[in-house]
Length: 237
Ligand code: 6PG
Image (cartoon, rainbow, N blue to C red):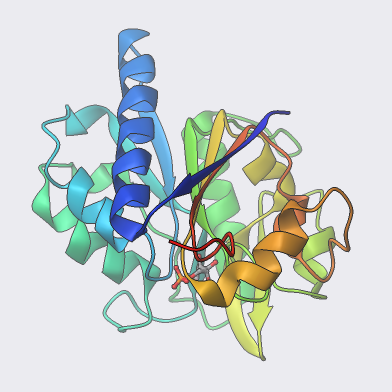
């Protein structure tokens, strides 16, 4: 599948470019009379994009928002990806509550939550177990260690190929994450990577060869656009 790498000056330019890509993907889905399915990324980088998405006069009744991963905390927790996305974007647009599909984090056992989310995705797309649905757009970030979503280096989640959603693990903290096959099936995958701290991992992830267990973002081989700033690409401004 295609991989495109774009270098931008800063987080604001990355967000503006990501907004255009979201707009184009939305236009394509709506022009076909279909709903637009988008998967939100967690962390801090996407916040600027979410604030821009909140300014769009889309037909939000046709937009469905999912998450690629979640920390195993309530939505009210400052660590929550859902909470951040709602505050920066979803609380500011007229999107039906039923169009927002958060990863559940109430079950005592996070493995149950992963199964619940997988079943929800299957029901939403009307597919059977074993089938992999195609989201219109999946937004991703990348950590300083080369992880993406909650696919962390040397964790079992990297090898899960028969599920849509599985358990992640960050330093012993449970995470819920979409799996590599589900992410790679997306019509379009957009990475947003900013900051000098990511330069070493980004170089290893984009290199022709490397260790996918050490740099899990290398596992994302679908139709991908990397939006990176100069410092992450180790370039002088
Ligand atoms: C999370 C994210 C994670 C994030 C990267 C980058 O739950 O933390 O899903 O994969 O995208 O860690 O995070 P920043 O954007 O904060 O650098």
